[in-house]
Length: 249
Image 1 (cartoon, rainbow, N blue to C red):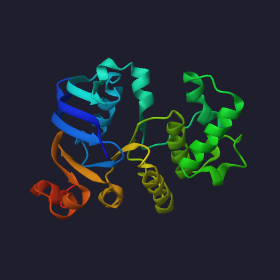
Image 2 (image 1 turned 120 degrees about the vertical axis):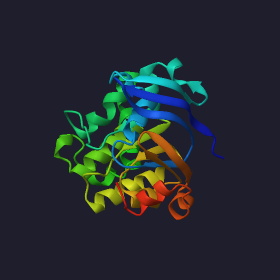
Image 3 (image 1 turned 90 degrees about the horizontal axis):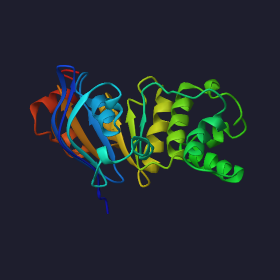
């Protein structure tokens, strides 16, 4: 049974005098793919950055409360929070060095692992991300030699290696071809029983394909949230419907 994983109450976010998020109230449950859609400047990416406190680095003023497992994130050490709640960006950011080193870099900072344990972690992480069969014979090759889609799945594997609870994705397929996009979507579907996913996407068809719930944001406001089927077939707000059918975006 799904339980509340992230609860957001009265969230407002400002950059200087510009209010980017306006009184957001939202609850995200475990073991689901929570899709967030909306036009540019809707506040979607800012919401993700607020959840794992990257917005703090941007100089944002954040008001309201975000709770992870019913604990205010302000009371969770920031390094621990970002381990538990990973964020994968639109452009894959691979570390210098080999595929293997990309996977083990983060875990080695948090724990002492034996070589055997690291090997097992690399296998598990790459397999979970659907990448093992493609790279198992070149683990010591530079990660930069991978294709864009493979690099994005490597970023997913790198996040998995840290044993997170939530994996947030900000437009992870925006620059990828359809085959790579399908592989990443399948990865998320295969892992949704192990992790909570929060997916920001401008691709409404992608949200409809894999989201269990979907939220529509517009101009910094949460307009509505519902099961994906309900939101796409019977939205309550005209703005949601107009966005879904492509009248603006």
